[in-house]
Every structure is written in C-alpha cells, then in structure tokens.
Image (cartoon, rainbow, N blue to C red; front, side, top):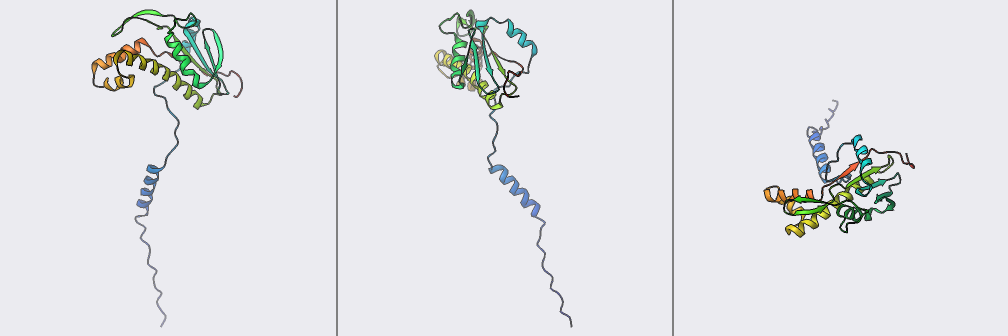
Length: 208
C-alpha cells in the first residue's frame, strides 16, 4: 500500500498586513527626519509696485541687504555699501531701526504720540529692502531673514523690559487673554514697526 503524503501545515498569514502596518507606524514615530528651518512669520507676496516705492525712499531711510549667488552679504546703509557677516547683521539692523544717536546717515526721526509712551521720537519712515540673487541658497535666505526679524524682536524686547518690566515674549503670552497686554504689544509695534520689503530675485552675476 502506498504511503500517504503528509501535508505540511500552512503558516497563517492573515495578520501579516497588520504587523507590517504597525512596524511602519513605529518607524515613522521614532525616526528623526531632517526639516528645513522655517520662518516665524508669513512673508508677503512679491509686489512689483514695492520696488518703485523703494526707489523713492530717502537714502538715509533705507537699509539694503543683498545676498549674492555666493551667499555673501552686501549691506548698504547711509549710502555706503560694504560686505558684512551674518553675525554682524543683527546689530547693524538694530542701529538702523533705532538711530539712537540721531545720526544724519540713519533714518529721520519724527515725533509720534504713542499709547503708554506719550510723545516720542521714532524712525517711522525707515525701510529694510531685502534682495537676493537667483543663485542664493535657501538656507542663506532663511538665515538672513531670521536675523532681520530678530533685530526687531531685540529692540522691542529692550523697550518692553524698560517700560513694562517684562519681556516682549511674556507680553505676547499674556496678550492671548489680557486686553491691556495686547494694547501694550500694539504700542511696541507702533514704536518699532516691522518694515521689510522683498524684491524679486535677480541675476547679479555668479552662479545661475
């Protein structure tokens, strides 16, 4: 009599898809993924009319920051153009925004009535023009933009601590549920209005 062949038991694969899904979720949750550093504000859309406005601004009221195709900075302030390092940009910008010593090469100062401060002299007509080459790297653009914004945050922070006894960040946190804190924030932004104009990228030479 011929022997009957033994059947090999089959492996139950009904849960394989579930296991694969769980593994995928595990790796997604535990893997560190590199991301680009983002901005703390939303940049305005490019406005071609802004370049015409910039051209009419008094030289002393404009700080021009150009990032060339080699990610180098060219800064023009008071009619003078020079190379600058990224770690110098914040202080240059703060001096421009405040014009503490009332320099004739820096923005005009006008008397303004501001809540909590009364009549003060401010550089309300100043403007920062940010320009970059088409070959400028994204990381350099982000780094420069963040330094310009940080300069505004610094001068507002100094003024906030001097006048209100708390940091600008603390005021922002309180403003979510405190009307007076919200009004103080508004006063600080009126004192030092954020004015950054961005021009359309151009080919200034170098990398394409």
